[in-house]
Length: 182
Image 1: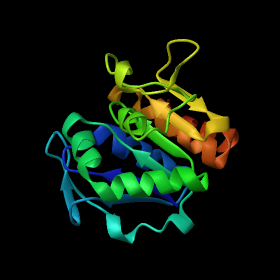
Image 2: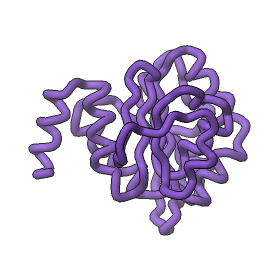
Image 3: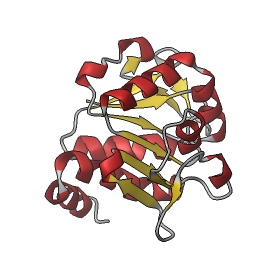
Image 4: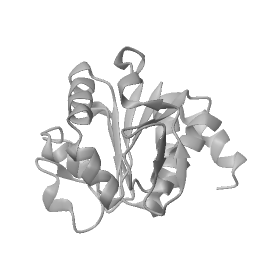
């Protein structure tokens, strides 16, 4: 199960595009709200979440995904349960994925040390311990570290396809890519 964590103000494209692509790829995926069953994104698009934060079962987790969005990331970072959940997932070796401003939370929590990662341009100083990517990239997959990061909303399709490839294989990701004419 992939859990995509949504706090009010999340960036809709960074949450919903990966969720859509993962589901197309046959990967069980749940949208998880930190704030009740219904959560509004940064553009005031309202989403009915599949689960609330207290329903996440790490024993079933294949990955945790943190979408960006300035307000959404701020609220994710203020939620002690989110930090506890992400730290425990990292401790258990559950892959983590974050996009836009969300990788800075992983940096704040000390989870990027020695890992290759990317974030929203200009926020690199908040990526405590991260190693700069070898080349400018919209998505960085640090397989050994079980970490996938994306740059911004414009990276949502590449980010989502990287998640599909990581969890379901390259062939399945290519099938999804072809099915959406990308």
